[in-house]
Amino acid sequence: MPSVVGLLEQRECAARRRVDELREEADRIQAELAIAERDWNEWVIACSRVGEVLAPGDGGVAGRDVAVDLPDGGEQPAPAGASESVKPKSVVPMWHSGLAWSALSVDYQRILRILADRDRGGQGPLSCQEMAVCFGLEVVPAKVEALRSKAKRMVARGWLVEPVPGRFSLSQGVAGQGEGW
Image 1 (spheres, one colour):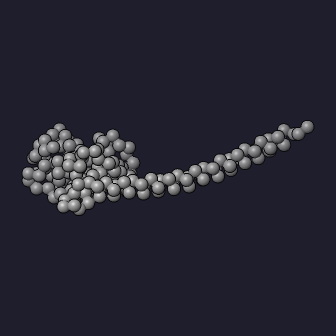
Image 2 (image 1 turned 180 degrees about the vertical axis):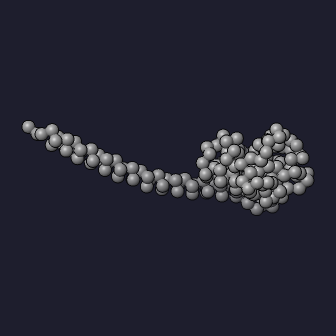
Image 3 (image 1 turned 180 degrees about the horizontal axis):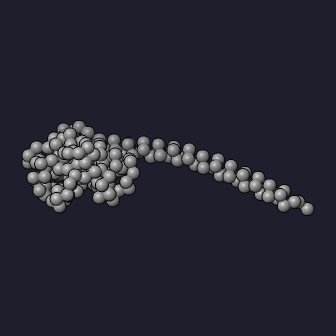
């Protein structure tokens, strides 16, 4: 009859083998996932390129990029037929008097709306972390930095000001537009 210690050692060895097998399987699945993600990204790029070529453009030149720039740094294809209402992603025109908010992509307009609401409420500048909360995003570095990039771009183009480093509000002329969207 086997001893209790012997039985425990057998079970421990069996458990170790099972853990090793599961780790090997997890590594294999991770490798397959990396390949699948790469293939998916290539497919998305290919679809985007085909869309650019097939979209009506200026004088037969490839059409505009109609991806919506999301606050989390990702992209979402624009709905069918929305190519005229959606602006090219990452293109933020220099602000000048009379330029409508609709000249911006949807996500830049969302930033302006949040800041306009704060301005109307007499609240001060907003940090990118606070913006992420307003957008209902998870407050993680990637999402906050994506918002910071957009806000800094808007500061450089005159739509926003950064009175204190890391805090943003509407520039005086943009705030004067009121409900400019």
